[in-house]
Image (cartoon, rainbow, N blue to C red):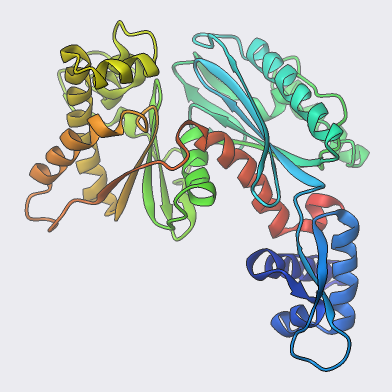
Length: 410
């Protein structure tokens, strides 16, 4: 193994131990990692200089002599940027390495049937403002990830029917800066932007490393957000209720994406073969009955719908009953195929959970029959509407922990 590769691996090992078991002294780190004290001291010094760890005061490890100085994970200098494009809003957030949200900004927007260039330019403006605030707080943003309402394959948004986008290379259109990267990386990204056939929407330099920007389906990122910021369960099916409905399957702490990144399109599971037309081109899809538009009807917003439900409004109660039963039908197929132990309902389903859970559970129990003693537990997301954007920021944080040498240029 080359020296630089070994050093990169050792940096990740030491940082991981500090994250999982810190605060730890250098002596304790050497014992836990099997590295020499000299090597650990040098690696810790590099991590201190990068601002990802901080000294925590003198402690005794049970050894004789002078007490050691413990080091802990620090959220004071390095952070990541989460971005989200949804049908009716844009959002950005900055999260530090301790998973603390340092700022979050949301902008209402009418993004249906929109031009990608316009929406991404608006997102850039929102992100630039957040980045300036992060810089003023002394934070270095190490990378970014974007949540979009559709399946993504290698940076290519395949289809977002509610946006009216198909085969849009969002990672090139946003064209994040590569201030810390070499000219080869800059030329590579510029070439990709030209090949995409769109005018690139560029941020002015804010210090991203090459490759530290990616995009993924909002349901996948919401599932990861629930994993890292919410319940912490390592095995579950996350169902994201928005205007469209997506799902993310988490297995042993990782999202299952399928061969082409298209897994989880629960909203287009057919629950009524002769039902109304769906924007995907099919009929009777789940989102026709349980998507945000179906739930709201003539109601103006989710908070207004909740108020009507609490007041016992028959039309609101009927809409949630219909949605819950349709959701139960779709989940029956998912349970038969995937056998999850828990199903987490997020997005707009979170505030509506008290009215969706009953009909969904009743349908699941009736449809599963003798195949299972009991249906999987239905749970409400611990982080609600923030799941996707937190998952986006968290994805980059995991990249930092996996390879701090590359992510931070150490």
